[in-house]
Amino acid sequence: MYDTLCLETFLKKQGQLFDEPVAETPEEARDFLEECMAEVFDTFKEMKRYFQENLDASGMTDQEIREACEVFELPDGRFLVVEG
Image (tube, rainbow, N blue to C red):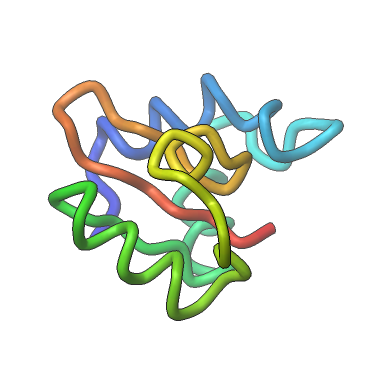
């Protein structure tokens, strides 16, 4: 479920959600993401719908959702949502 791009992006940007690293290797990142049931979405629209249904996003603009600490925008346009 979590490809190399997801794992590398999470490892690189995990500081936006956590004060200290929760993973140092791709294997640790995969284990962590599986444990917290992180979700990967192909489009912003899919991710926004999930965010609004499962997280408190009432009154948030699209830009605020994109910049939420739980949202990791992947270089290929997908989104990884990690509920820390």
